[in-house]
Image 1 (cartoon, rainbow, N blue to C red):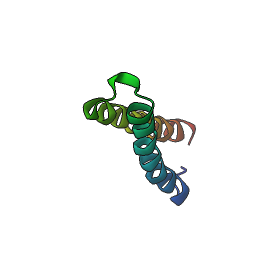
Image 2 (cartoon, one colour; image 1 turned 180 degrees about the vertical axis):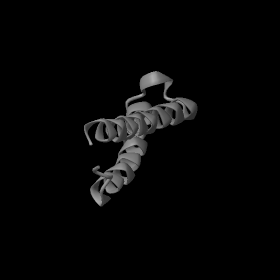
Image 3 (cartoon, helix red, strand yellow; image 1 turned 45 degrees about the horizontal axis):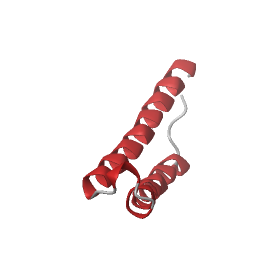
Image 4 (cartoon, one colour; image 1 turned 90 degrees about the horizontal axis):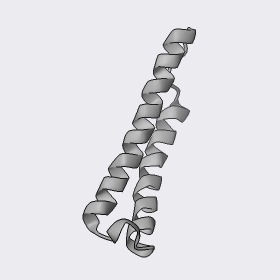
Length: 66
């Protein structure tokens, strides 16, 4: 059975930074979703949660295939 690699964990760490920066740009700079701090935080959490869902799906797929 295949396991997660260092690349998977590194990509998740980088995705957290990308999520924070992307939500800052979209909410604060481009004034989307109302431009508030709460909206920025919700978008950041949503982006990170989406990536976690992807990792869970990948793990399940590796178990099914393996």
